[in-house]
Image 1 (cartoon, rainbow, N blue to C red):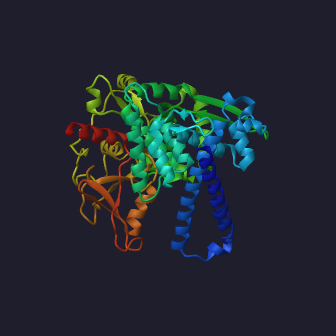
Image 2: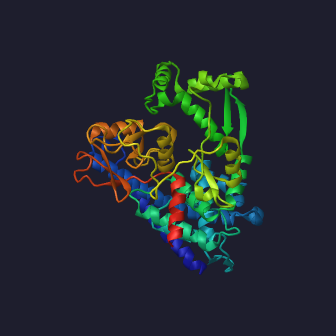
Image 3: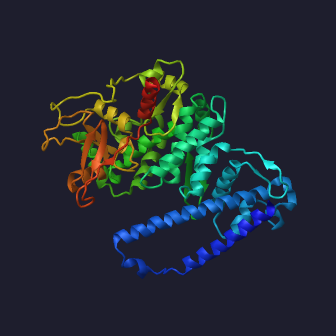
Amino acid sequence: MWENDCMATLELVDTLHGHLAALRGLPAEVADYRGSDDAALLEVSRLIGEVQRALDGHRALVAGEIARRSAPAFGYDGLAQRAGHRTTEEFLRAHTGATMREVKTAVRAGQALHGAAELPDARTGEIVVPTASWMRPVAEAVRAGVFGAEHVASIRRGLGDPADGVSVEQLTDAARTICAEAASSFAVPDADRVFRRARELRDELDEAGIADRERQRFAQRALRLLPQPDGMTRLSWLLDPESAAYVTDLYDRVTSPKRGGPRFVDPGQRAAAEQIELDPRTPEQLASDVFLDLLRAGSGVDASQLLGVHGAAVQLVVTREQLDQPTGHGWVAGQPDPVSRDTVERHLCSDGVQQITVDRSGNPLDVGRTRRLHTAKQRVALAIRDGGCRFGDCGRSAGMVEAHHIDHWERDRGGTSVERGILLCRYHHLRIHNEGWEIEKRSGAFVLIPPEGVDPARRPIPMPGKSPVQRDLARNRHSRAG
């Protein structure tokens, strides 16, 4: 068995030598790409991404085996230790020339892949018991070239371990779902998006664990002052999601006009935004000065002088179904992780409730053509439904977007409703109006229709919502239907 595995590894070495020689034989000059057309350039970029993911998969598998052979139990006889290195990561960095971040990711991913396998030890013949068997679908995706090392490490971290109420079978199904979604998507999602998806699925499975994860994040909060050699001081502030919502609200109020934020229509807000746009300070300098002013003024500050009409606020969203249950969770607007029922109750006690009634499709409040602009309550409803800008993979949050009428006010004589409205950031809102893009609603779902110059066939592009609240509602509807 060991001899067969050794022969297979030697064949792999020979194959990699051949591929490396082929890659080194490719032209690698600026001029080689300067003259290429867009289609060829993008195809090369796509292929390089696929090659990179395939190589990262092998890197993770190799790093995982080196880590296994360098385990502390082997002492000085470990593979890395025999080479004079204390840890696997130090050994790999010196051996490959990769950064410490790269080798740490490769080791984490490799350990997850090896933990999914039930194989005999090549030297002892003893069966190595799987420690993460639910990662087997991910190992298959790596073999198919869908995922690289960072994807594997993200999925492992996002799904976590089995617990009370969360079985190995459920985690395996979640891993299989992530792999299927990635394989069927137009482009493989990046590792950060894969992590978020894994965390979403874990939260769906583990309602009871939401409070524990919330406490863990809160316990990680930290603020550090880091004096710099040039006399400056760097501030490093790690925030839990609820605290980050307050700080994000402050930061957006101060800087959004300089960062392409929404175009205010209220005269007072528009005047304040124009004043910020004309301020000679950069967004970073402006934020620094305002935050410092807030700290200096403390509790006696008049927030309206610094932040507009009112101070920072956190919007917590919870469905009526969740409120009617003894357990459940809610969401802090703009933050991706759910909060526990205890946090929901605390905000209800201190902030009260604003009720928004929606229909079965999640669409509330239609004011027809009596108003040109969406009301404040409609914007809240849109934020709850859409979660931010819905154009492609845009990451602009609900605090940095504008409400767009998919039936144009003048051209289509459209009304002002949530059902026929959608949130777009300023950049994408301008593109819709200026470049011939259209948004339609088909079978209850928004789709983006590109102009002929982008796609002569004008094939519709899905515009999925980005709101975790809507995912909760959809899951509950599916559960009741089943």
